[in-house]
Length: 252
Image (cartoon, rainbow, N blue to C red; front, side, top):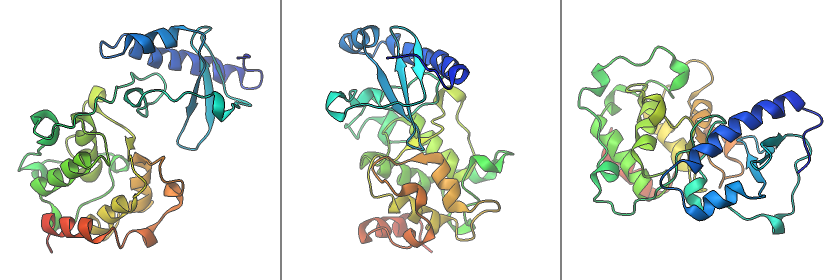
């Protein structure tokens, strides 16, 4: 890979940040020895951000490229799923360790305190979607919803993702930085469920930007190419099965 010639300063800074993130994988005990050897070999990694912009990083030389990043699809090898979590450059990359055993208390039995809505919300209301309508302020129902989404593989089934999702919904119990998944990966193409959740829980929206725009800022949905352009017209229906579940958790 050739060095960046257009955005030199930006690429130099990005290389430092990506190097830090990649090194967090190397030092993780859960990382496979084969993948460690790939990182240390003559391999170039291609990254895509939420705006579908590409960047390349070459760990062997510690350089990044931002302009004219191109590749042949036939020459690309996808990294294993466990390493494909969204991250901010410079942050540690948390591995995706799928747990299909729904009896595992650390994942499937996520719960929220009964007095959740007696707690103050964070001061910065740009950090959460909005104020949940009073009749739907049910911590157990919110936890049931989040557990269901994880168990049906809409979101990652780990405690950090669940805590972060609950915070984005309620504005309460902000996770510590090392457990905060700032952009949650919605793993399937049926993003109508996300819009329906907003439609159901926040009927009056939220000052500044609207509930749907707020929600889209906190999620990435790479399986739905039009996710970022969707709006309220996608919110009213989400399939009878999911709508019935929502009705059972959040009855009128």
